[in-house]
Amino acid sequence: MSIKKQMQDHKNRNREKPSFANINLQGPCNYQCFFCLGNDINEGYCHNYLNIHFSKWKNFDKYLIKCKEDGIKKIYLTGQNTDPLLYKYLKELIDYLKIKGFLVGIRTNGVKALEKIDIINSLNDEVGLSIHSLTPEINKKITNHSTIPNWDKIIKSIKIPLRIAIVITRYNKDEILNIIKYFSKYKNINYIQLRCISTDERYSALKEDINCYKELTQYISKNYHYLKSFYTASIYNIYGIEVCLWKTIKTTINSYNYFTNGIISTNYFIVEGYKKHNEK
Ligand code: SF4
Image (cartoon, rainbow, N blue to C red):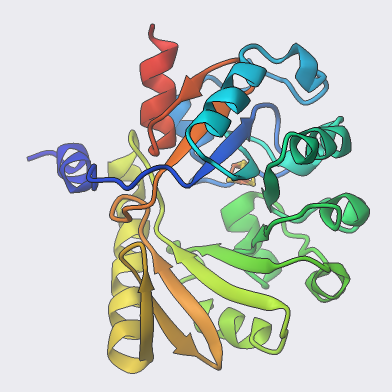
């Protein structure tokens, strides 16, 4: 059986009622992570909606109405192939979603976090910072950029609930426990999420990284104290902070997805849902 088929078969399609929604912005990114889901879609940056006001996004209000009708309260601003802090009308968008009655959070690589700290602190839900390395050479291999954002200053400046997400790769696997130890000193970080690379199209190229996740999480499960589970993901205590072993294809959590070119998907799997609706 091909690796792709094996991975498709392992996807948990037994999902719960959607509990949150994403707005997936499209445009060029200030990072070029080798595992970026945008690479699975392979449309390059042909869609750039970063300078387009959300009142002009196709189907956007239709999406918000669907979220309301289906009882979704939380909306996360994230990127299909870009970082949401690069969106020109971000503050207006957050205000608009809040007026519509949603809790609004963001997922960001943090490069622009200090510049946009007031906007971040205007959110009324969680900020998720993606931090894959504290070592310039390793960050370069993962994101194509060696500069490490000033995480100490950023984390101290954030006044809303905060979590860190780290994608496990062949490059940072030996650094993960040190990264957890480093951030365990901050009391305003709710938890750290370790993520397995997610791909629908590049299993062979990313298999080594997926295996690194498996090895590391097996090590953690044998050596650290298990606390609880969250939508099938196990949570451990490492250096006094909660560390969640998140495996996108296994979780039972569910969400809706909007893409700024007008695609609405009720599929949790971002690439799969996008492609299905894009082909229509
Ligand atoms: S920061 Fe996010 S959107 Fe940008 S390249 Fe990395 S994974 Fe892709």
